[in-house]
Amino acid sequence: MLLAVDAGNTDTVIGLYDLSVTEPRTADDGLLDHWRIATHAERTADEHAVMFQGFLAAKRHNWLDDIEGIVISSGVPRVMASLRMMCERYLGRSAVVLEPGTRTGVPIRTDHPREVGADRIANAVAAYDLFGGPTIMVDFGTATTCDAVSADGEYLGGAIAPGVEISLDALVGRAAALRQVELAEPRSVLGRTTVESIQSGIVYGFAAQVDGLCTRIEDELGECNVVATGGLSPLIAPFAESIQHIEPWLTLHGLRLVHAMNVE
Image (cartoon, rainbow, N blue to C red; front, side, top):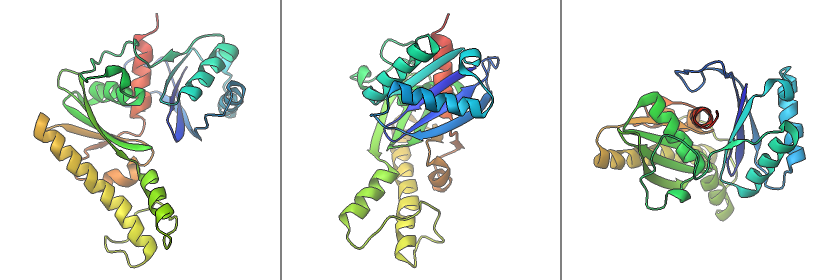
């Protein structure tokens, strides 16, 4: 089995894949289980090991016997260092890390390729594998990103906007009369309470933002496939007219493909 780990700024998502599935047709084909934990830069390699082993043990897996490989992407250097150390100390092997120099099969056509986040590259690898190109990948994470991969499988760049939760935190933090609300679908666009008004602004506002960005990207590239991923994609994506597919495990699928390209 394979552990695919995407350590973002807010959450770390872990997927357990069956390596015997060599030609997956969907992002969750062969996905045996998954877990989401808060990302903490202070968490040590030993603490990560306890958590990972606990998740696997709960499903009756032993990572020394059952885990054949691990692949990691992260934009948080301290977390990456901790995960690398965990693999070397507890698994006795190095992880495949998605970083500059790692084979991905996706040429990066930006001015500074080394600056592109590993999760954005993983999304491009997965989206091109599943949908071909040109394809727009919308990721609702700490930031909301809209990236594009060409018909030839090249990563072309994208747009980065503040994420849903960051925007909500900023709104509540700067407006004395407003408070945190549950991120949920409102009853209508015209909220009849303050809570519903905030929910409407978040859900419909971010859907409209994505539609606007995708329209502008398509003005440059022509008609595109559009796929959404990220923890909040099930909430926002259904209200974005441009989004055609929702793949919550898109990044993990990309990591699985990268792992296959970089092992003997």
